[in-house]
Length: 130
Image (cartoon, rainbow, N blue to C red; front, side, top):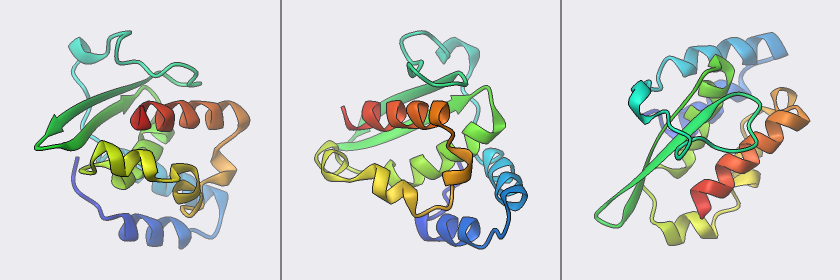
């Protein structure tokens, strides 16, 4: 994934003045997320409870958590870019101390997080903090 800072993402999404503009921005962001090979899209990596299929893979490097993720939906891939900007390169202790729901609420995504998508996003956040 091309590194886009949290602040840059937040500014880009907050600048969207309509639901359509936010959707277009999320689709543009989805292109930044490297696709996982089919061999890694396994039930073991799939996040439960998501409306769309979402896969999340965590690795550790020098005590820092590194995440790779993918989805079969462009919109969700855009949301994953935002989530990964908040979580990538932090320690497990840092991640567990974060209020990821509050952090995510600052990105102007509420109109896209329907109840079923919200459940999926909460599942992703829970898995990241586990």
